Image (cartoon, rainbow, N blue to C red):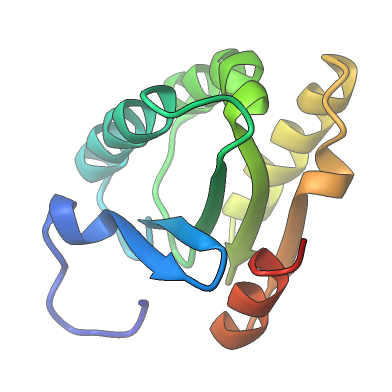
Length: 136
């Protein structure tokens, strides 16, 4: 996902892909601009919130992703609705200040009673992330 010189369109950044258990939501936030980060949040919301409870597994590439305080707050406020739907979240290449944002997200999720440590894992290798998502 990361590493290509051309930025993928929003449709390529948030997309469903088939795997051996059905499908996963690929969420590519790598090297995005702040404007793209807001658009990606809304695209993620549209994709996830339209799904049945307990049915979504996510592969998220966060390498060099952009964010600000308002966007972080939006993600934080969405935790309860995402928790009902997302069963696993594989985070690829969490770099830079995104490490702090994800740590804050995890903390806030725990405070809200979300078993985030069972649902979320960090990966540097996309193949290993996909294998973890495919485990029951």
